[in-house]
Structure formats: C-alpha cells, structure tokens
Length: 382
Image (cartoon, rainbow, N blue to C red; front, top):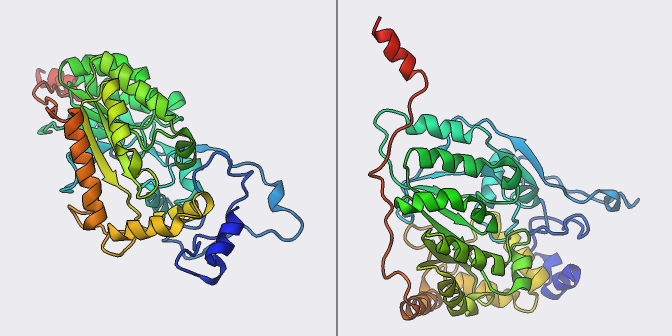
C-alpha cells in the first residue's frame, strides 16, 4: 500500500509529498510502532540507511524491540519561560516514548541523543532512575519557591515502561511528602494505579490530571498512537480519577484537520459524562522531523486525503508546515484555525466545561530536610 501510494503521488520524483526520511522499515519489523522510518537525526553528519544487498538480509532482521538505557541526570526540574504554557517548571523521568504517537512534538528531541526521531524515539528509551532523589534535593534548596510542577510535558510519564521502573510514582511520593502541587498530562490508563497518592494530594488542592483524547475511533487511535491506551480506557481513567476526587481535564490534542476534527464535540461530550470539568485543545504541530514522519503516515494510511490534509495544515500555519511563533503555535491562524477554535469554544460552553479553573495550592509546601543538615546542626552545638 505504501509503494502504491508513493506511485500515486509521484513521490519517487521528489514531489511536494516526498518521503525524505528514507526507506520504510519492513512492516513485520515495526509492527505495533507509529512511524515507518528511522532516518538519522538532523544533527548527524552521516545519514545511514539499511539497504538489502540482494540476499534478503533485511528480511532476517528481528522485530524492533524496546530497550531502556539508564541516564544519570544531574538535574530533574526543567524550567521554561514560554508564554504558551501555564507552568514554568516540569519533570520528565523518561526520554523517548513507547506510545509511538506519530505526531508527537517531542520526537525531534531524540536527535540531541544522536538518535532518530522516528523509530528510535519509540524503541530506544532512556530512564532517569535518580529522578526522585534529585527532586528531593532540588526542593530542599534554600529559597526554593513552589509552583505547580508539570509531569508529562515531553514524554508520557505513564508510558508502558513505568510499570517496571515506577519513576513517576516515586516522584509523586516526594511531591506528596513536601505538599508540592503537581499537574499531570497522560494518555495512559496506568495513571489510575496512583489514585491513592493523587486522591490524598487532591484533597489538599495539590493535584490535577489531564487525559489527552485524540479520537474515539479505536482503529484510528491504534494507527496514530499504537501503544497508548484505547480511547475507552482513557475515558475510564477520567471516570475513576473523578470518582476518587481527583480533578480531571480532557485535552483534545492534537486536532488534525480532516482527520479527527469532526470528533471535537463528541470527545468533549464523552469526557464530560465521565467526570472531566476542564477542557483544552492543541492544533497539530509539525516542527523539524515530524513534518516528514507525519507525511509518511498520511501516505500510508490516508493516501486519498493526504494532499487535502496537508493543504489544511498549511492554511493554519501561514502557508508553511509549521509556525513556531509564540501565541500562535498552539492554535494556528487563518480561517480554518479560527473555525476550529470557535467550534471548540461553543461546544465547551454548551456542555459546561471550564466554569471554574482549578488553581493548585502551593501554600502547604514543606521543604524536604536537607541530607546532612541534621548532622551539621549537631556539630554546631559542640
């Protein structure tokens, strides 16, 4: 199908939909993955591609497996001053994400590791086992001013490997002990595992969770987000969290023109009935390598609509594939972006979302005891 679509669009002749990321990895090897290729990152001097030498050697390669490498981080709280974000600090206990969402805006960050934003991003992962210890130290620094820490800003803190590594839960343990506010964004039902901690924190105004729901179509979700929870499981997570007293929100993200934009109202309605009371959206973003990776997905999965989808995307970005301008990158510009925004606002208002926007409480913060501080106090008495 991919080859046929390439012929239909004349991709061999470097048309507007040229698959510049390189040849697709065999379907059997990448089964269950979101992207088709594994081209070198944009910072690499050399570009390497696996080429069959005529002896069928590529067919003998095993299926791509998920590997996890330990990363000894030096700091764990990341700061930002973006006017597009509602938080100024975040934590990412993992690099890369096994969910494999084709459109993930974090994919280009894998290029900083000398890896591909394509299949490497979803198969070659990094875990920071010292994340909780670093967090405790950073919260204990004299003069630290607490504000909501966001979990899930770059990669999902509840991606499948969290079941074994439990880094996110250990981070929540530290935050709970310090009475520090936290906001979580995830696509995973695994967040319900930590309802015990989140419910206790929510009772003090310290926690809220947002579930990203891209579509209610299970087939589309499996194609766009192959290893994320199904739409039904995400809605169930909203229900379970809400019933436990944890404030929940729904993010219709990303909205992809002519792919899932028709579902805006249905997603909001379904999430409301499951207990979500806040809602937001983000228009599809295609920075750096994501542009080519998403085009590949379109050609393989929506060959009849690919040109139309990309045309609409460009209409929301001033004629380009992406515009990173502050205040514009999340919502886009132009008539189509305006229509998406108005539809979302009308549906949100009609259903009853955002009547109140919960602001988490940082007034209960209690810094962790600095290691060695007690010993120093004892010595000062001598």
